[in-house]
Image 1 (cartoon, rainbow over the protein chains, first blue to last red):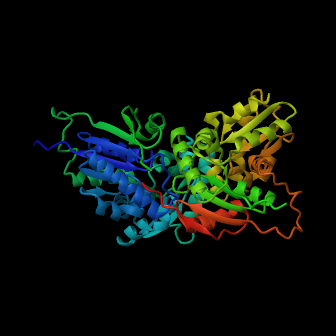
Image 2: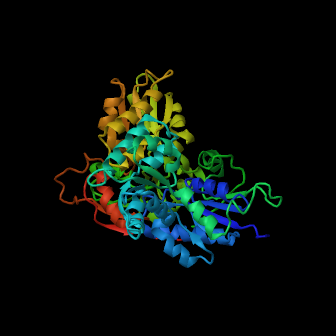
Image 3: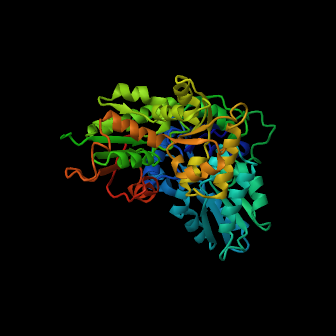
Length: 274
Length: 274
C-alpha cells in the first residue's frame, strides 16, 4: 500500500487548535501538517458571525494555497459560526469540531442529556444544541468566557480557576440538567484543564473532548487507521509540522508548546493586508 | 468668545476607551465626539507592537478622514506601543493616556514609588516605567491579564475578581514596593473596578485613573476649561457622540453603556478591508 502522504491544514484563531493538532499527530503521524493561527485577531469567541466567517474563509484560502489537501477547522467558534461558508469557499474536504464532539457525546450519554461548555459565540450559535438535538440528545449550552484567559494565564491548576469552573458548572448542571451525564469541551482551550474539570463536574459525568473526537473523524475520512500503519513500517516518517501566525512569531513559539505538548520551531509570520 | 466647537476623535481597541470618553464628555461637554472601537480585532493587550501599531494608525486615519481635529488614543496598549507612529502618521494633535497618568501619579506619590497595573503588552513596553523614571519616580509594573475578561464578564463586584485582584496586587506591592503610595490604572477597563481595587490595595495608596488625567490634559490642550464655559452659557450645547465599531453594532450598543455610563444610540459598522 503506497498511499500518498497527506497534507492536512489546521486552522484556529490562535493556540487552542494546537490541542486538536496534538490529537491528529498522535493518531495520524504519517502526514504533513500546516497550521494557521490567526493570533493577530484572536479571540474569535466574543465576535460576531460575520466577522468570524470573513476571517475563517481567509485562513482556509491561505492553507489551501499553501498545499493543504484537507482542512480541519480546529476552532469551535469558527466551526459553529462559519463551517458552511468555509465549505462553500474551499475546494478541499473540510472537517469541523462540532459534529465529531456531538457524535461522541451522543454515544457517551445514557440519560440523553448533555452539558456543552464553550465561548459566548459558540453558545449563541446553538451549533451543539442542533447537532445533539438531531441525535435525540437534549443539550444545555453554557458560555464560560473566563476559562480561556485563565488557561492563557497558565492557571491550569489554580484555585481561582477551580472556583470559576465550579460557578459555571453549578449553573449548567441545574434546573433539569442535574442528570446530564456528559460534558462536552466545546472550546479547544479546555483540554488543558481536563483534570480540574473532572474534579469539579458531578462524579457520574463523562468528559467528551472535541479534539480527540475530531482526530478520529479525520483519520476515518482519510482512510488512515493506526492499525493499517504499523509502528515498524519502514516507509513511515515522523510528522512534519509547519506553523503560520498572524501576530508575533516569538510569542507563538513561547505559548504554543503548552497546547501542543512539544516544542515548536518552524513558525512563519503572515502579514495580513489591510 | 466664540471658539469653534471642536471635533475630538477617540480611539480604542474596543469598549475600555469609553471610560476616557466619559471623562472627556464630563469635562468638555461642548464638543463633538467620534469614537472608533476596533472590536473586530480586540484585545490589543496580548498582541505585538507591530500589529498594534498597524491597527492604531489605521484607526487614526479613519477618525481624521471623518472630521476629527484632535485625536485621543484612549487605549493604554496603543499609547504604550504606538504613540510615536500614530503621531507621525496623523496630521492633527494626538494625545495618549500614558503621560497624563504618569504626571498625575508623580504628583500623588510622596514616597516616589508607584505601582502600575495594565495589560501584558503595556507592561512589556515599559512605557509607564520610562514616563515615571523621567519624573524621578520608581515604578513597579504588573500585568493583570485576567482583569479585562472579568470586567467584560460583568463581575465588577464579584469575590473571584476580588481574589484575582488581591493576588496581583500582593505580588506588586512587595519586594521593595511595600511603600509605594500610588496605584496607576494603566488600562481603560480598570476604572469599572475602582471601588474593589480601593478595598484590595494597601490603605495608604492613592488610585490614579488615567481616564480622568487624560481628559484634563485634553481640555488644557484645547484651551477649554469648565470655568470658561459656565453652565448658564446659552451657546452651550449637549455633547454630540457618534460611534464606529469594526465588529457587531448590536453588541457595541449592548456592552458600551457599562463603560460610558449612559445609553449608546448612533453606532456605525466599519467594514475592514482584508
